[in-house]
Amino acid sequence: MNSANYMEAAEQDLLHTYHRYPIIWESGKGVYLYDTKGGKYLDFAAGIAVCALGYGNEEYNQALKTQVDQLIHTSNLYYNKPIIKAAELVKKASGMDRVFFTNSGTEAIEGAIKAAKKYAYIRDGHTDHEIIAMKNSFHGRSLGALSVTGNRHYQEPFEPLLGGIRFAEFNNLESVISQINEKTCAILFETIQGEGGVYPAKQEFIEGIAALCNEKDILLILDEIQCGMGRSGMMFAWQNYGVKPDIMAVAKALGCGVPVGAFLMTERVAEKSLVPGDHGTTYGGNPFVGAAICKVLEIMEREHITEHVAEVSGYLWDRLEELKAKHTCITDHRGMGLIQGLQMTVPVGEVSKKALQKGLVLITAGTDVIRFVPPLVIEKEHVDEMFGILDKVLSDMEA
Ligand SMILES: *Cc1c(COP(=O)(O)O)cnc(C)c1O
Image (tube, rainbow, N blue to C red):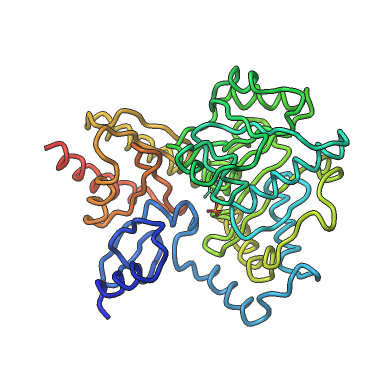
């Protein structure tokens, strides 16, 4: 079969829930992807902020191969060594106290919601609590995670969703305050909104919410699924703000391609939250994903990944500022670390398609933003290469 046949087969057989780019990836090396026709592409998407170490990292690959030969899965009815080590490393990186491993980001959000509800139930002796989430947010596609995703278009066909969810304006403290009442048990948001268009939380917003939560015993749940794991220039984005969540969700780069997520909490929450029988998963935290997490965290620490991100992201920032000064179609530049966005007046879907034709992988966010979430191991020369291609794409489109 040639590429066209494969794509035709996919369109016949797979449920049509994605408009895919006409490309079939074959392999990856470093920060480059190769398609089945031999084309080489610079990757500024990292499989949607997943492949933080890039592709073909030999040490990571070897750790997975070794674990495959040793033991892949046993269930959570027993202990396994890799996940015990992974828990220790994630706790150390985050300063959180307890972790539950899931298979995805969505499930991490589900668990976080359940933990918060259980905490409030034990404290108050009754249910019917409310959660405040943000407009323009993204937390996943399952019914629980969709219920806290502030996007009417995603929600509408699936109503009724989870009750007791109120939406406030992100980065507007007054808007959140106006939604708080005696039923509020948690406030949930992405430290840096990703899918919604790359909006970092403002310092006064996150600080104000943390103070409110502390004062009223409301749990602060931060979604670090996209912005966590070093991408912001700190291991977790909230560490840039001097606050700490009560519950946090991670996934994406946690396994660097192995499907795994986690929700973590402080001991104060864990003491009065989920107990045996309240929550579970068959796969979650199996030895295979455990080995991946251990290796990812080991490499990130040894290679000082956060320092690298801080440095190379400053360079990306400067070059994108340069691009913004040059092209009038760019109306805003936002972000932090290696999650940055350019808002544009030209159709961003076209921009990413044309970039792909020139060997650059870019993804969009929101309706009018090009999102830059490259592997964390990119170097300045890759930023320059990206700049060259995107500059040309925008010049062509403006012409
Ligand atoms: C990707 C993402 C999710 C959902 O994670 P999945 O692994 O796709 O289930 C949730 N929240 C944020 C912020 C994300 O970026």
